[in-house]
Length: 109
Image 1 (cartoon, rainbow, N blue to C red):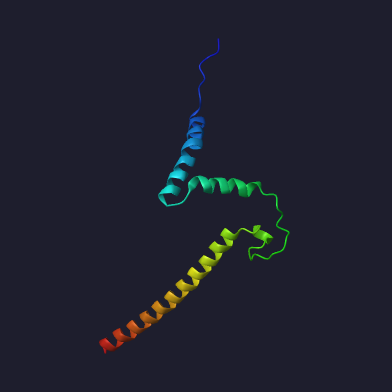
Image 2 (image 1 turned 90 degrees about the vertical axis):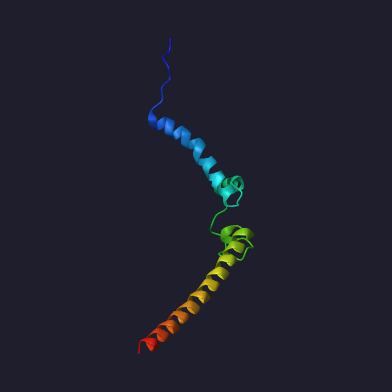
């Protein structure tokens, strides 16, 4: 007669993490307004592609290194635009700080 099956603490932890971690990820994604299940599917689809990165380095969306992923190129363009906007805001605020410093110096005199 076989004895009772026992698991180690690590095995229990591992089994729980296999279940809890994906559920937590999906829950956090939905909380942030994203589709967690779709993100997981895209993650596994990205790993299955067998396209080589030796193609052309034209990243304009028509193939090449990113395989024509228009969503990725759209995100890149949005991030570039946001980066430029933030640079402009930073320079405006630096100018404002300099003006305020000049005003403080004048008031101290």
